[in-house]
Length: 592
Image (cartoon, rainbow, N blue to C red; front, side):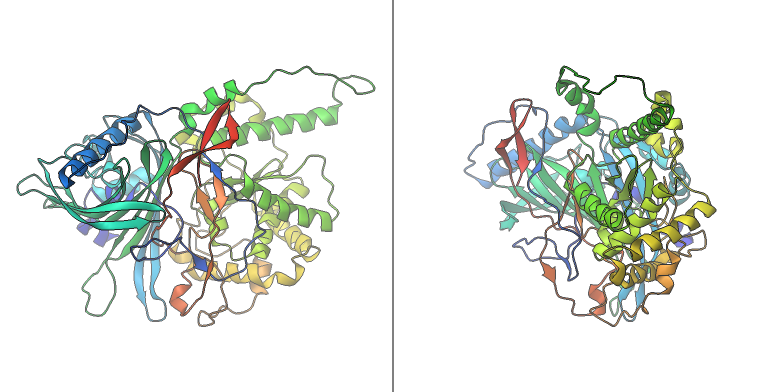
């Protein structure tokens, strides 16, 4: 940390916070979908088309047909400023996960420490950033000498926006030279590639690199480069920033990958890291309540019960607990932390049902499953709703490992550990999104955790996964091997963590101890996957879906990359309108 403090002044986090998507690897100009190591997939869910219902955007100028490179450049500049204006009313969530690296003889490079940041950002004229994590501020101040002052600067490249936009204030011909390079496909989108360089004496901290421009409306869809020249007391990191066509006429900043240093022979780099940043929740907080109001349908109620009566005391208690559960789930979704109900929930539900049926479990209320959209490996249960983080699902190698994770929370439900109902009082939901972690918590005491582990193993041994428990055991062994270097990834914010303060795995230890030995040299032993290998997140509406990617052969131990950060290579597609789905009588834009 002392080295960080000396080398990286206040612009560190600016260079590291904004966007991301499924893991990939450097690709040739003809873009291909990101892929994951060859391994058994979880229970397949119906992915389908990810519908993206949006509010009508600002008017988009009719498509033009420029006849010269100069006219294309003018159109690019115009569309970039139109995007900046369009996003001024948005307050998306920004999540960044960073891993510092150290050289390793077998694996090339391995994480040696990690850092995690989660904030909501106001994209209006003056940057306002609100942190979800209370301890985040102290870390940033120790790292950058005063983070608050940074965000009083209005959209200079040192702010978060420098990775979202090429240049919010000065993206014009007066400050930049544009040189056409070539045409290139990114996924299904034909792009024009331009080299962008600052003019001499135009100022410091200006974008330097390449931009990819789609060939219809001339929106920037990708930026790759850094900022130059840097002032004496600042250091700008390299970034690869991607946008998705989530709104008609606009490509929305969605993912950013940043990387510095390497340990190749002859390299003098003393610092090396990789970081993913993701932006989501553009539309959720703005339109959630209005959309719900327009969907209200009033229907007649006909009580057909033999004798209409009040609920019995036991029924009333269960209804009260259900109200508390529903309040929490709705509040987490509103805060941008929980994905709306979708197909991934059905995958989780299928695994839960497999365990319940084979164990003859009959609970008075149904068990549900939902996906938390954040990186840290985390599970918890609210009443009878089991919540699993995106990062955890990403890294699980197979269905048996998913079953083991879910069985622990199912055990809490079966043992009656989730009977608290204080959140049934709606005033306890009245807090800001950024203070969610300070106002909600679902941790269990050590005795309950031990009992849940024992019950989970019992449930698994009576389930269809009884003969496949070596896989979750290996997952936990791999997690233990890296736990001391990944405290941020292993820090749960609402439930119990997988490890203690010393980096020892405490979850389902019986499975870990009975698992085969971890052997990185065995190419067919895939204990855990990289981050981003399973779940795709829609940045506009927070919906999640399973990634459909072809298996990729493992040729060396370095290809495994368990729990590691990798670059983004989303397959870009244009927004199309589907008539099969209707929202409020209007066709729903969908990304196919």
